[in-house]
Length: 257
Ligand SMILES: C[S@@+](CC[C@H](N)C(=O)[O-])C[C@H]1O[C@@H](n2cnc3c(N)ncnc32)[C@H](O)[C@@H]1O
Image 1 (tube, rainbow, N blue to C red):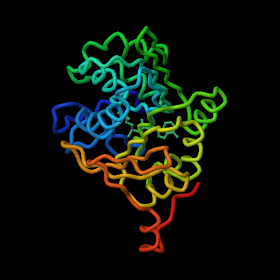
Image 2: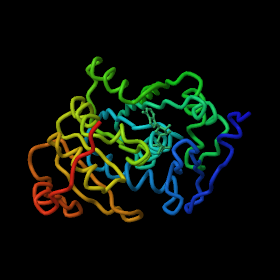
Image 3: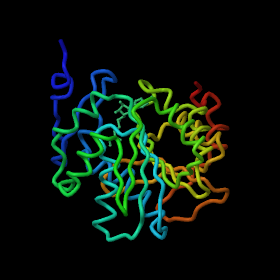
């Protein structure tokens, strides 16, 4: 019989020396082995999103999905390392309870050593709160959680869109999914994602979000989506004209439920 340890003991050391896992169910690694787990998390999500909002005093972050918790923990690491005075509230769905339970013995990077008590409390209670951080993990389906967040009227400044790829985890990349996301965004919110696929960008764009491409120093290109109605001027952000893209590629379509 397959138990938790057999399912998750296949620890993989990525190229920055930090560990990830491989999901048999989705047939994918949780992080890019080539780019490194911690490096990928910081370069593709945390640094672009926090730098975009670095003048804020409080940020609501939606972490899709918790997985091994790198994006949540790397957010705290980045805030502390850069002495940013921002209160952080993170909300994160994860439907795999066996995975969450296994994290108690997962070997995180040394950068997360100072969060040992946070990690333990999160795994036990799916909740952590102190004066600087509030973290809520929802053990269930992400789409259901988006409804729940909408009903609670919680609005987000940042979304880390880090689901498995759309070929194996379609329901977290569709136009209808991003309609749910859009309904809980603050004005000026930023979505970060490793996917640069046109169908994914259309799923987002069709919800009236602006699409940009950004090349982090230490990783491959990513997509940034902004919830505003003007073109954001940043020398490092390339604005993607999705109308032009669709005129040039008539077969390009958003992903649908
Ligand atoms: C690529 S991993 C996330 C990695 C994570 N951001 C990290 O930094 O460790 C994707 C996660 O989404 C979870 N997942 C997939 N579909 C889901 C759904 N519909 N609802 C909740 N969680 C889901 C998987 O169990 C997996 O843990």
